[in-house]
Image (cartoon, rainbow, N blue to C red; front, side, top):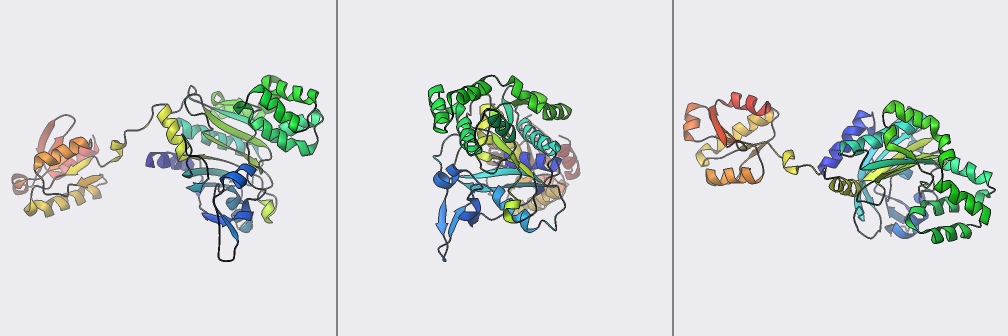
Length: 397
């Protein structure tokens, strides 16, 4: 949907993000250890080249971005703000908000470990959803931190090798019942006391929320504090996240995340560059489209069409109609030229069906007197005027 692309791109420009792109096909090894196990083992579209090298249709673009930044690190001015939209592929069961081929939008800031980078991206995320018609009643952005969770794990005696599986279990908390969740924690080797501590944290996170006061203060300065909530159940599934993480959720309709991301401090360095902290998030056209449907904010797509139809009276006046349409377009007015030799009544019916508000008619009498008939379709009115006046009326309407 062009409306989605235009909206997201306008927010990217508003926040000073530079657009980039990367390969659609990458070596499979690029993603090993840099994306989720689920994507690699269950959702990957793989193929082989002539040398039998395993390749993968990109399921996401962050590893590609990190590789490209690492290769050009000496030439770039940091921090960088990059934005991408392009095709992604995941072998998932098609359903509401999920397709196997989809357009994804990625925002990344690389080269800053400041909280300002985190809050800038949070503000971008909120701005996109607001521009699409979202309000405090229709979405919320949950935030958490893997490093804060790891610190909590250490305080209750977990081993470091337990951190990741426990985070993965917590990531599934809102999708399973209590018994299943407890069993997931037990499989991670947790004691009864440790399991109780974690379930209590998730149920009563008030003390834990105090760790996020600095970023919540920044959120207030940005005017987005009412959209943000601390939620220790948000851990994100990708392996490269190291600290701050976040997800936006719809409060009505769609159950899967509207967008999500976080901080990755080691990803660029894993490609041989100096350590460069990054933070980013992604969303997709399929998810955003379902969101605007759920909140009844789907735009009238007819309004994106040309507001003017230039009719063609007959073959002898076709050239004049073409020249008139060209003049309107040079004046910056989106104009459609009727292409068939149909009756005027049929051309007007065409404009009505397409909700084109203005119809410009040039018949033999108008051609002789060097003027036009400008018809206002919604008002069912018309006037005779010179073409220059018609241009002004349409532009000011």
